[in-house]
Image (cartoon, rainbow, N blue to C red; front, top):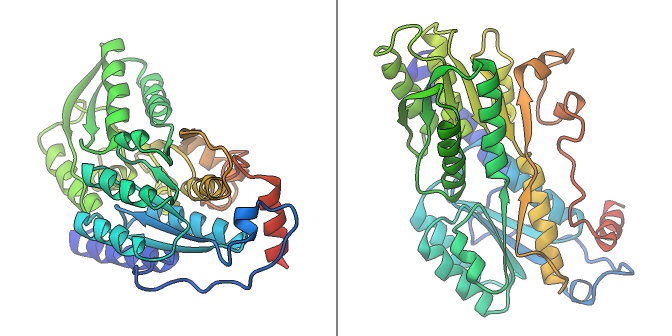
Length: 369
């Protein structure tokens, strides 16, 4: 695919993602459902005229973000809550401005996603100072020092281990690899720690090159960088690519496929509909990806926040379990596999009852009528 055509496709996918997430500017609010009286619901939830939650995510423009925000919104709405969402699409200033604006409104709780800088800690302190609970996903670990905050994350260590173990087994412990990674983000730091241990424990695996950048067009930049890199290395000089983010894997897969370098296999982290589609393409180099369902992450974060609003105990941190999705598993399906039917080839995928209390189920039943 030519770069111009790919850019058009990326813009199109981005537009779909923005619509799918229901992202709102901080000044606009979701319509509140009619309040229903349900027995057995905690007083703080039952007496609230309308529980309102704000979800602010720093990164965006990708399918993972769309599904995370959709999961949060759907879970909250199913219990009669108002859930407003905002994606800053990687713009730090917009991210912090969104939090500041939302703080002036009457939200009962906040979910902060990918707030990686010190300014996020200061923002959250302002929120909790007002007695408003916060759940922070893949954010600055220093938030653990702020009372009233629960940190959630994908089990990044296990994500990295799953992907690297699969790669090592298929390479039989011998091979030259390219490492796609970017520093500065908590999940990337955790994944990199596992990678360093992996290299030390497996001297037969040699790193040839490493690079990576986080931007609005990460996939395009990665595709161009990998394409240029492949011209420097002849067949046999690279056996695999370890991509610590699906945005890296997407760009790498396109570059490898266009170059006809089918001897290079890609092992990634994270998953989305577009990722699954790419893994199922004919002669796709993307052979496996370790992931947590982003929709489930959004759902669980909302449940934890609801418990905090209700005054119930919630752990200070929680890791969501990871799974390994392989091309071989996808090929066992008689139909195209997407995020909706992935559970057919991977039992249990997309399902979690973590922190789902009986009173939440009662609310869901009432608002489903």
